[in-house]
Length: 156
Image 1 (cartoon, one colour):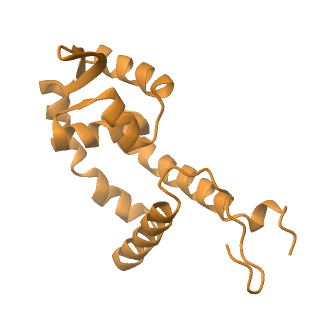
Image 2: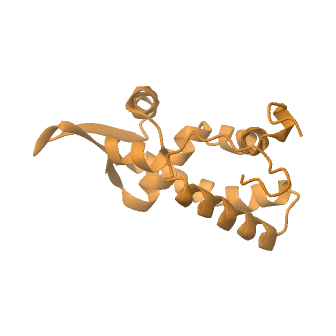
């Protein structure tokens, strides 16, 4: 097996799968006027109401150069507020607004709608999530490793 053949790279298969799933989200999120990264921010804020930009970046594995313009657009839409932390001016706190909170009810139908589009059972989805979470944990969650399918007894 040629290790430099694109189709032999697990990272490529995961990349394509991620893009396909994001594409399934797109029409559902358009109804909420959210992009997929904005939806991820909203998921965290529906859970926590307020997080710092640093905390959001860590949880979403996004750097501030990506996150800051995204949050500015969300603030312009009235979904969040951005405010410097009075106890530490270096930190910017992101808080969900009432209009942002109101989107939660409409968003609650998204997981079920997406599940109907995915050709995978609930048990298979749970198993896949467990495997991916396990791999992320073993890679330290922030790895940029690109895995190649094993040949014989070679490690992945």
